[in-house]
Image 1 (cartoon, helix red, strand yellow):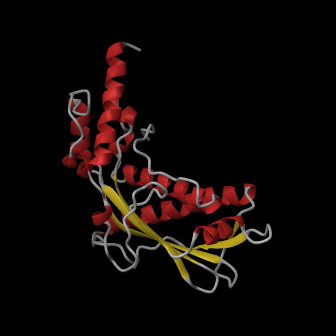
Image 2 (cartoon, helix red, strand yellow):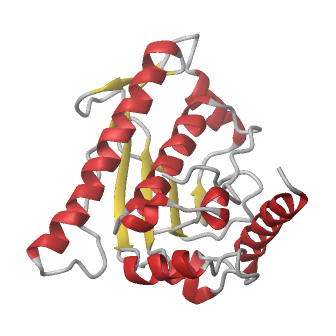
Length: 254
């Protein structure tokens, strides 16, 4: 690879990092009533913009490790759109949002199902039961990518290839999505809440060559859902001392 190409990759990484550090997205999370405890995080431990937990570290580790080597049952409710801010009235647009919820559900069950089969810290149950922890997740907002603007930018080589840094307008063009999650102990006591807002994130490959998510209205948002599911999977199976950080950049252009 030529020195020029290497420089382009370095510029892409720096550009993405600068955008990630410019501002917090905590205030962009819709206050729709699903989450009742909003506490801004420093992302040192949690990858989400808001995190609240009423328990101490010992309680957390007990939830993860189980009691007397017995794994904890967990019920993950279907992802809800009940608290969605600004649900479109257009049937096609609404179907796209419903598709995101279906995608979230499918990814959760696929990833957590694999963990359930290979890990002894928890096992999934298919309906609520008295001895099970319960996880409820809601998509709170979602805006599609502006495909025309993105493709025009690709054609013009604006990102890095044209020497420009990613701006706020560029982030808006990638669309956004936010979610909240509530965690209940057996018996129905609320023990933790998280919430997060993310703009679509252009991959480093996309900054230099092409990001195929630019060809999809919600491709960036599905990629964000993938990251959320991976974060939940790690949090469900690791002790409190484990750091689960938000990704500053992505390599995946799909």
